[in-house]
Length: 184
Image (cartoon, rainbow, N blue to C red; front, side):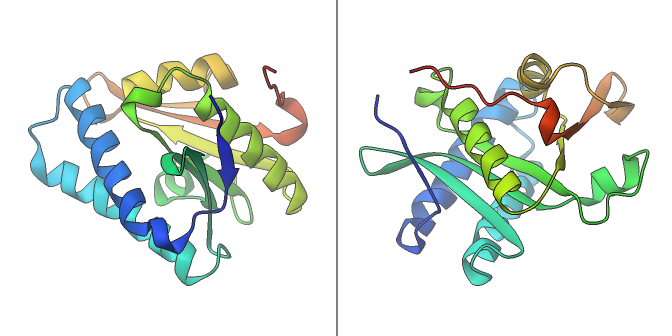
């Protein structure tokens, strides 16, 4: 499979918006809250606003990378100022530290290493832009398990953050602590 990692093209804006809708709707369904239409709409709108901010500021305030297969956007990742959740839950000042987020892969492309490829590209981007650490957070059970495999145990677990038994996980990593791995 040939995957190109690149900055998003403005001409792909609607395609990326649709990708967020597809992945978020499916994720919430798998998480057992797919019938919460208000939550679904809010999460999709949040991601659409982030990619639009990327376009409006040419990546200054929110920098995205996309994974493209045969001309179609199949995945996203971004770096930005830490979200309010991280600011509120972190055990240290997060000023000037970036968050890695918006890792969304179309369902038919999940499990093929595309998220790992995007993550590696974002590590390299962060280093090139002068950053030496990052935060990443997740509340989705499926994603928390994936991130634990990739990044190790979370740095912080916010017990019962979303509801009883639904924790929120935060990872804080120095870039010299992570591996950049590619299967060739």
